[in-house]
Image (cartoon, rainbow, N blue to C red; front, side, top):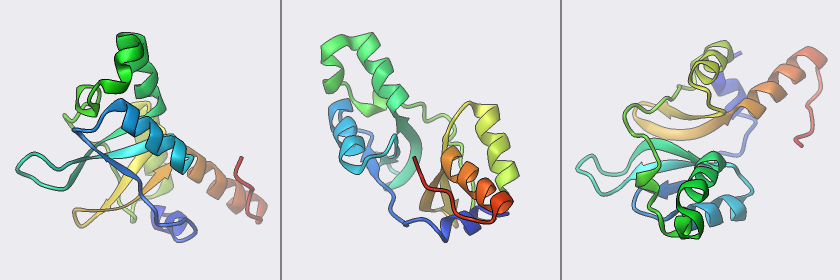
Length: 142
């Protein structure tokens, strides 16, 4: 099974946050969209509007632990590692994506085809697809 097979069944919505936004804004975006991860876009550097990382609930917790109540004012750029974005393509197998997630201890991967962000795939998406393949019926999301 390929990532693209899973994406065809998903809503193509991708929620992003800019590097220069605050943790408070990022947390509000996650809450408003009922999601646990955002794609971080770099719109200030010379590369332009480029996906450079992921910002997750874990990053919010880390910000609060390190900065206390002032965490809401911390910039996303201070918490996101942009050394190397771990991503996949829609033509990658789910086995490869599971390996990437396990090796990098992450649960969300941006899907980038031809240098364009097309979606985000989560460990939950993979688990649901595998359950459907085994059981033959779609599983309800929790």
